[in-house]
Length: 572
Image 1 (cartoon, rainbow, N blue to C red):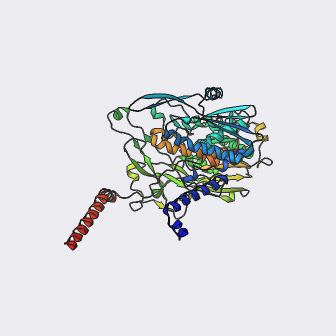
Image 2 (tube, one colour; image 1 turned 90 degrees about the vertical axis):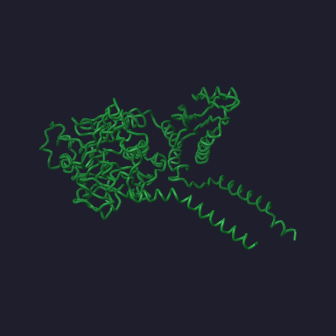
Image 3 (cartoon, rainbow, N blue to C red; image 1 turned 135 degrees about the vertical axis):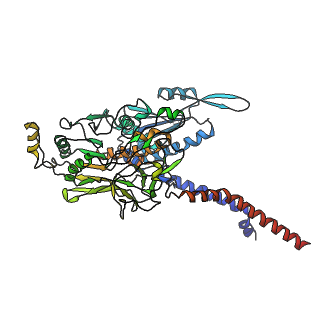
């Protein structure tokens, strides 16, 4: 009887549940078992950590100076970083010498200062008193005779994606000093600009200043190339953005760069349009006077397609609209205050099946934003010894147009009204990003005599791929992935960050480095507006949201009162 009473005792049951929970957590902790339910697994260690730690030849000293006597909200933000450091220690084992230090003594604070980690004043105040204390938030790394520090404070807050920041600094310790990235940018007529911002109007769709500036900080100097001569041997990857006008001799230099094992990142446009900037005087009065024009097809698209067809590629002369995958854009012209879906900007993701998940470059990419873009065509018979991989593709219900208004107001009707004359709805997914890799054949095998070049340059002509090298072409149907236009307002900057990480991954992959692709792809989740309802239905749902809770409470109160009066009637 006593045994039965024990099992019926609630306190006994609750105590055993708590003990069982602690035991399971202890076993999971010792075996490094964790469940991460966040979108994109942003709180888990990525495979990038294992790749980089395998390259350690001798122990890495990691000293984390993290103050604990600080406000609770700061501790909550720092705790995931401590967990990540412990995970790195478990993966690295004897190669990681981890010390987590709470600098409370004078000796510990002096050591932190010697390591290059300075205290930050933290103010606390309540109704009785105010106080200021010094907090330490930094990590010191030492590998051999090289060392660096990582600040955990960034722009007034705790650094985001700490795993990526840690691995990026560690890779710098493992590599030799590198000031030149091996990346070039084609600067000629028709290319997107990389001019420094003088006014806010320089943040336009045809400028890539922010992208180039950030890329040089992360990867080293980007050399500007004009193609007046062969591409220098120091360039491994050449970026071409916009719709540059190239002579046949300049095309030849690109062809031979590819034959030598060079990489081409082509971000080209299949149409053009203008954005009229708002009048500054009207903006001061609160009136936006800017506008987005109609799309047009430049003659340069045909010239580029004649060149690309030799390599089995083509950019189609039309715009792709995605009403079901439209990006919730904050209007770049400031005419609308809220977020409105823009079908000419598509958000492609693994979840919606638009990103190919079986390729090393894209298998970790959760999503990418495609603004103002065209679809591509593949002609595999042109280059039989190369491999064509579709990495990003449209949905099966995209709308194709030769010309259209890009006004945000007009685009709200896309997908809600019958197709316009000349519109075409896709029945299958179309490629918008293609990687071509392998042994190329030159496009100039039968044209070498037509070129106005020095005899010495002609004698160095390569009809096919040089030796054991492989060329790579990555073609994207838009030059605006990392355009300065995203900086017109803070909300759209989040889209720029996602695309910037994506382009960084592309560049490192083209140059043979895949270490940080997985960790760099861990980006915050962006909600997608899947369907844009008609205005009438939006009003209906607005009223439903407004009245639902009061209606439920009224019904609940009515039922309570009715039951109460019925009970009283029975008692009487």
